[in-house]
Image (cartoon, rainbow, N blue to C red; front, top):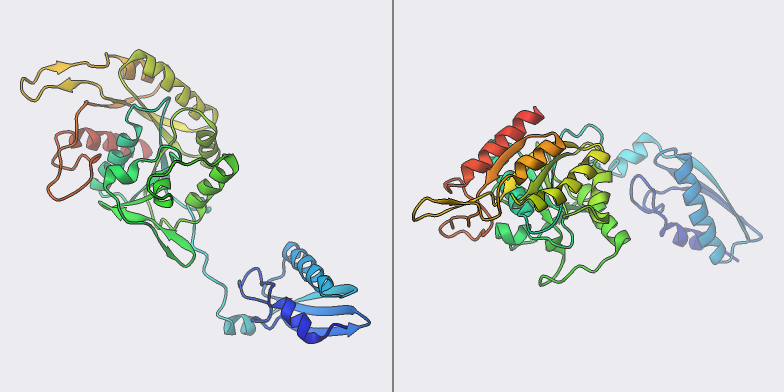
Length: 347
């Protein structure tokens, strides 16, 4: 025959859904009657919520029946304000990027295919926005092809505080990447559901704080992961990256079409690797041809935000960040101008 201690042992395994403490810790059990294997309980939760009450009733009933109860009846009441205060009150729920009222602007950087410098543009656009006094986050959402930590020279991992992931800060940018959660550059071989869960974690379980802009380095192309991100961010603005080659621009148009179909506003086009300028002679060579950025901007009826030449960043003494154009780099003003145009469009 069951006794009250067995009931309490079960209630230790059931949590108040709002206080996140066990029903024993909250002293939720207000009355219990045990007769001939039948148990009647009066349980006080911290809030009145019919859905949560139904879930807890099912959980308590199934666990007590596993212990031998023939029947279980649960009646719910509500803890008093004083009882809730003595328990420490309700946990503070920090806002997420997708919380109502959050004013962060999402800037997604997309491309039709890999290899056009989309991540380079994402990193240096984020830095250029920060140089103009904006609070900026950078989400490396290219799950399979993450490269942002290496480009920015990030070696440490995110911290955990109050069950939230705290982004790594580098050059004044808050950064989260799939690269932080794999060991030794291991390949990611997850399938759709697991990837979707990771993306939810990036948006909901990371505490980004107060941001003006979140730059998202999207996966290339129009595959499932890119589409999933588009569906989660219905109000995102988008920048399409291409090279000058006409075929590259033709492929990039697909990314632009996906942005349009998901009601994303296209901010403009960045033509990367637009030309090569010899440091010795100053002569300009169009290694990948000309006109791709103009063709794509005409096709998508948007602005060409800038042309970025083909060059390596100038290393900064004592700083490892192979993909970053620092403020004294000759290319930095190109990104500063792109960032200035983006800010103007968004304000």
